[in-house]
Length: 371
Image 1 (cartoon, helix red, strand yellow):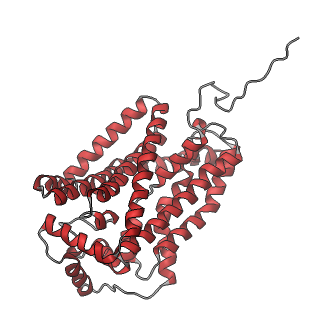
Image 2: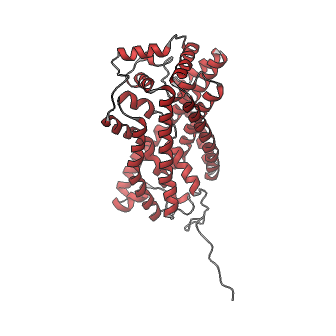
Image 3: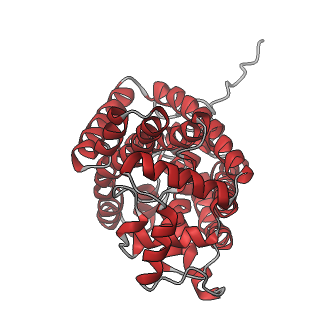
């Protein structure tokens, strides 16, 4: 008499038999790009608001402080591997009413801002430096004007709407297609990101100053931009060489945490993840993605300090935080892409591409969670 062999069920839901389309590695990628490898605020906000703080140590501290939270999500996801994440966890403890209220305000309403925020990331930090760099390199006023258009409200709104529309089309076509799209995005983002790291680590403040001066001259007709920005920052009372501050370094961590906190986001998709009950897989997905992203963010901070110098980070922060207009180029804040903009095309292309792919992918992952 033949003995029936039970089929493994790690790839299907027991209740419906539907196929789980997200592997642990895909969930790992999902978290990395939801955190945003190159979300910019830490690199401008922290130097401007927290003089004397060390970016690298603040980012690493945020990563360490997030690990206990990540471990909680690992245990909860292992015990309750269902889509819904926070709603599932909170409804089991506090009841459906409390869970609905918290998740509706903390996730559903919050997600609405991403129509604007991810569109702003894509427009202002992706397309704008891309076309501004093309305009400066090719001496094309049309390209430069297009880049400036992407920094304005009309460009950002149009980009946001189109970005949301493309994300919706991808999700409507099926979650499997979204996972395939995600695979393309992680490859593009990592290639661009590591190229940018190499370029920055090979740079130095003197060459970066030359690139910025040439770029500002080509785009805005400004001579000696960096020196002018420096003088204006000092006149505004900005200390460009502050002493080390432990308190400021500690306060860098909450800014970096605004990105790293999303290492747990895959919990919302547990019902789509193969073998979601595995503690080992959940550790890889959640804690692994947190550490991977935290280290890369810290490396980017170190690369920026190597390329432009600490003093210039405070100048850029003065334009963003203190409203020093001379520390912007045609109103464009000096994001990490700026030090590359007048360098060889491969350099600013890699930088802009990293912003484009990361912001597009982040929008898609947020939309996937709300779908």
